[in-house]
Image (cartoon, rainbow over all chains, first blue to last red; front, side, top):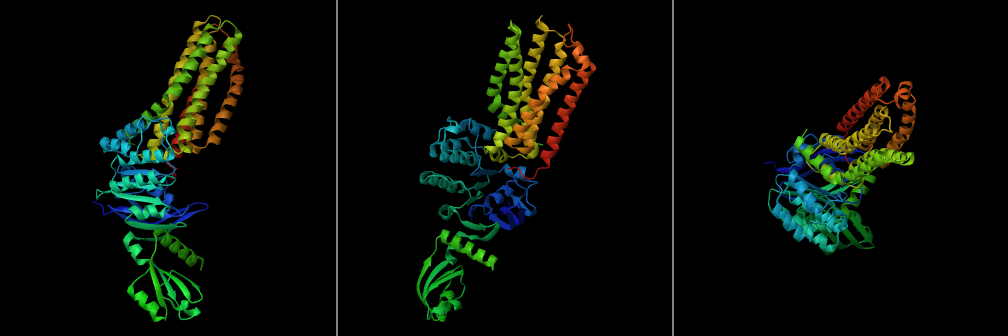
Length: 298
Length: 225
């Protein structure tokens, strides 16, 4: 059994106006990885490289133990893929699609498909062109889930969904990985979705992986500290800061290395720690991306 | 190549496009009926134009709907998420389009031949020329399909189909004025002159060459979105 469901190492892909650079990413079997990035950050390109739809210029890509793109066909027998821009055939019914996918994938679970039709409030005899956006997304997801894939790759599956549909989709994803051999890699710009169901997180910005880690560890090591400095110049001596903003003697320090030692180091500069706040994933994402951009600009 | 997957994909295209293709074929049969029972030159002329239009339209429809539309409307990622590669995809498109086009093409071609041979007022000498036109339309269709598969672009496919159909008028004028064709086209018997034989052979070679180019282009593609 392969420990890593997905493994990218030093992947490069250059387009005229965009490049993926040195992308390395590991998704252990049985995990849900939330792949977060702004529009145009490189999420879709990375996932398309994985699916063998786009070939990379350099680097090593492996999916379920198969090298990509050479082993993409073999890998895809065990992968369910849904992307935001993926459409089903408008003139055909959902039932037609289910019969078609069932013929292709031996592992198709008709009972589970019927259950998903009910859970997603879909009608199998309805033509795709008569479905709303949310229903179309759920139909595509149903077709991916009911084949019982070992790996689900979802590119922005919740974009444009209303809160109820989003809840249904996220619930189905969570249920899909009850089997610990099943893995989900899903991209999103919605950090709330990721925070809700992912157990690992990777941030991508401008074609580069900014950070990747276990979600809980992530949330634990990021904090926002509100400090009162001994004097207005005190902020220059603060330790382990991803970002510091100060107005007079009041400073806000964002750190990705929160610990008791850090607090002690702050106090050692003469600062008073007023509060230590947890950060949301969105705040962490924005802080790390901005820090990386400033680092690159410098 | 995975033959089972190609069969699934061909079946998919057959199921999605058989009804419009059958409707077009029914229109073609109506055109044949007009040719068979027309009692004026006008009706015969309208039937001829309708028959040619139907064959051309089926070709454009298939190239456009089964290839370009599938790509521009976002169905291609769904298809390519299946365990297939560019070879399976391309082969399935060539086979499914071939089947869907060749059925009406063959039925209407033989129907036109039957009309020519059955009707006394239509010279049997027209048969080789009509056969040549059918093969020329086959080549035109394959060109449009090639443009659709290689570019995936609505604009390019429309441009190629448009130019091919405009060229049909010139082709009809040119071939009907070839000396050996002009000498036999109104005759009582079909004469397969050397010009007709060479041109039909050239059309077949062109079809095979275009498909070979499409195949070699497609299997080298690295980006398939």
